[in-house]
Image (tube, rainbow, N blue to C red; front, side, top):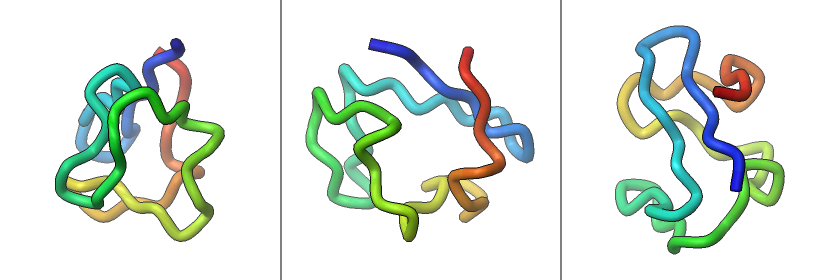
Length: 52
């Protein structure tokens, strides 16, 4: 699965780990995240992420 990086704070969204801070379980791809999802570190919106 594709990892994505926040262009604001460099946080990496890894679908194999999910996002505990936002209640996203493991194995959820970045494209499956809702449009309301934000970076767990800096709260940037999804459009600030790019494929890693």
